[in-house]
Picture 1 (cartoon, rainbow, N blue to C red):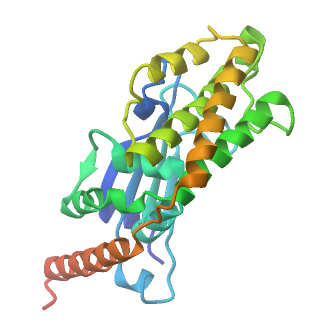
Picture 2: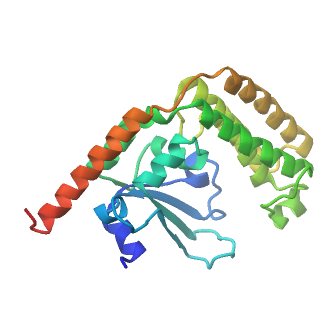
Picture 3: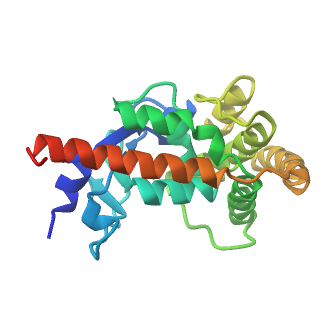
Length: 255
């Protein structure tokens, strides 16, 4: 069985720093380093019985919260990445809109060239769904999965969690209206997010902002008729796979 780490790293076509650093909301010395990548699968993982969807590496053991400077790396197979992006997964979409990348091969550039094909109403629903879920956690309507007791003790609520909820609203609105994501988040929204994270706004003030963006985003989603361009996505995936496999055969000296 092929080692997942070796498979991912030797076939990687795109990688970048995501998370708070990408959004521009990280605080120096307080955040971990989130990286995301995409790799090509060998033929047996596409046409055969073998399965590879992602490789995950964390400096901290599973179940232990990452600390400042810790690396959290996820490398998706091209098929899983494109499936998640076409479904509008907000976290995955970030990789397509970074201003710069750590790794960007010719196929990686090709994936970036079709990034607008992933814009869809479904993405709007995903942004809205995550925003609404996090808002309910903040108001106590459901159990909060992310809890930073040090922030709750200092500010009365998890300001980082609240900031991410508001960010999802800002970015969802931009994604549906501009068909793009600006990274880092553009002003004046970035200053607002930083103010929330720094505890400069009360919970009531922050919830008012979140609810305002939630209303605006919901209205946009309900009017949106955009669907992901699956023909363009499929065409790229097939051509990229053939190109990658041909190059691998050449390097192995197979005619």
